[in-house]
Image 1 (tube, helix red, strand yellow):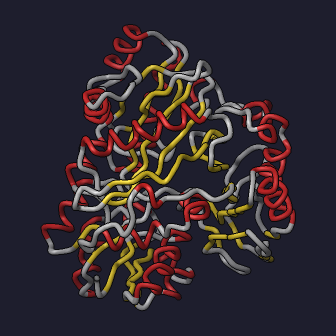
Image 2 (tube, helix red, strand yellow):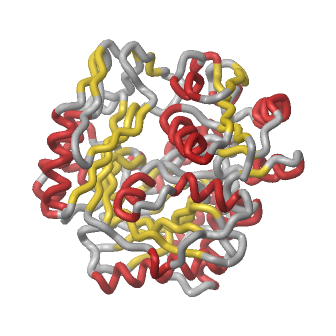
Length: 457
């Protein structure tokens, strides 16, 4: 096991990694920007080091600064969390060349799954159903237009170098393409350091289903069930749950099998997520693979009792998984709601000082957050403040528990998405478990994005 780990991230995921390391007896080193000097992950880590000014490109995305911090602090490994450098193959490669263990999959897996065309071709060769898309990054707007005409509108523009909703736009017509291409490219560069854009056919009103995977370096690989992630705004998820209520048992088994088959095709180790779209006819298609831990990993932890972060660390340290597929049991139902610092109707960001903060408690309620009373929510980073996770015997009880938890979550001083989350849970389609990626459009028609910005997968 490692002696010390540097956490190349911030906020709640940095704290989550610190929790796991505390239980493993591993020393932690936090990195932080000048804007995060007083953050909780800095306070709870064993040591901390500043790596730059507030903008992420000058701090959390600055590879030389992160590597220098790791070398100065003498750590054994780096955990990237999610976002920032988590799916950056160059960063993983540099870590290894500097004698630092990157807590994640192999560089080849990150690079191949990060290239949307390579990922699609690899999964097609493995026998997974795929959505038609470009054979690589699109060079410019004209090439995008040519390919879009070939496969037919609507199309989806996607950042080739990452995920999480950054650099994604739906385009319904040629007239919308120019603005959408420029916007998606700029977002992709800001989020991932690359302007490369991939184009694929757009599927209307799908379910977004993902399968949690965990593998070691000895060929052992398991899935830990699926998550329904269809409640989204601007391609970023707001609510996730497991098991997915809209799937039949037969389709669920098919998706699990395809996820494992795809991961085995690339000898995957570490935690990762295979993502699928399920169309209204019940056909599923491989969308992408996220070679990192996901924001919504807690719902899987609740129903399987598997600590995914600790298993990531064990696997990176060269240990075998302590269980096989028959050992994975699913218990009850879990739902996660992401609480963001944004207006609940316009979705405009709402950075600022929190003046009152009280998290819900009680049976079956978990809150992952780095916020607190008097915390300042920075405008430089993602707006997520907290994740509320509930677990119950069945979905009906989980819904009751989540409604209670959201009603008792107090955040004052800034606008938050709490009222929107309560509306989502009360939506008849959500209550019935019959919803797709357009649920937010139905709830907020006045703020529905233009076609070139519409969330849908």
